[in-house]
Length: 201
Image 1 (cartoon, helix red, strand yellow):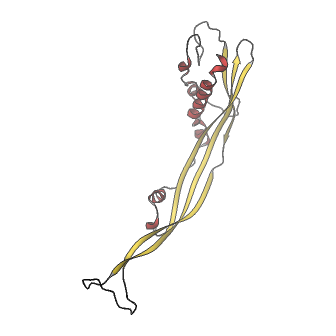
Image 2 (image 1 turned 90 degrees about the vertical axis):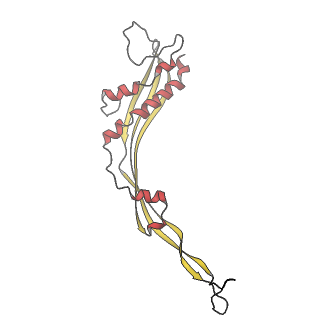
């Protein structure tokens, strides 16, 4: 950890649980902790955390209108003299009447994110030579959506009406967001180690 944030050991223990045993084959064996055996390691892979950043709390607002055409009763059909038209049975001819309703929506998205950045070095343990360095980034994003409406709610789509049920939420604490990067960071380490195994084989 070369960042200014003071991680606890639980975070680092979680990063090491990347399933390196899947890489073991023949004479090539991977370890994520020191063993009691008297082993000399040929290569060392070091994951370094160089920076930890947390964004400001953000509110992104979007306004839009939804409309809908609905049935609004009946209306009679008239001839050119203003008389109600009749069908073959002598009944008044009516047609469905429609109207368009609308509703204005203000949608707000709350956003806050933590980003942990660093590098992974593949090192020859005998010469000390760095064989490869790969960048690594993991993010944990808090996103919450809610909306308010003004107008005829019948004009709204189902997914929009669901948003109306949401209320503003409390933003997570910085530390909670940072510690939430553990799983994506571990997954990034796993992918980089697996994709670059040729460097040390």
